[in-house]
Length: 116
Image (cartoon, rainbow, N blue to C red; front, side, top):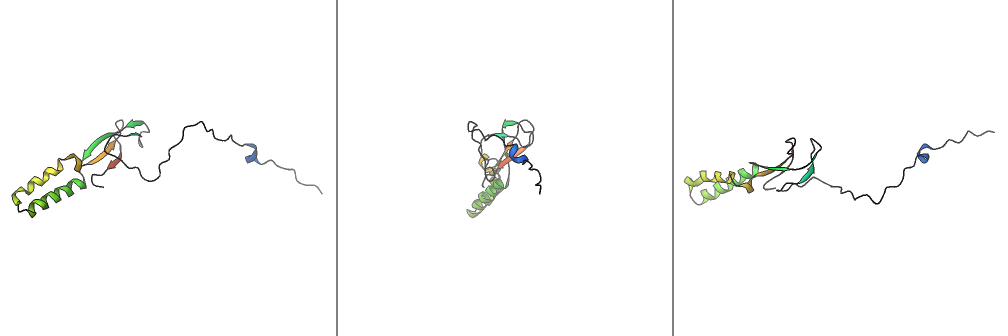
């Protein structure tokens, strides 16, 4: 009785070398990116270039909530004629959303909400 010839397993024959421990550690981020209020060095999702983001302030929901709160406080004190001054909250930078924009391609990589 003859046995079939033994075939070599291709996975065993092509073993790769173990990873080098001299390589720098890789930081793996879990969960969504938390954007801040200052520029960050990132790799742009759109143009794949490593850039320092440009911060643009935009009026968002937080700005309008601030307008509503100021208007409500003015009404509570009976200052009806001063309610239009509540719109000054739209000019304050801390009530605005911060967009992280790529300076190369103009792509918005992330947003930091004002009151989030």
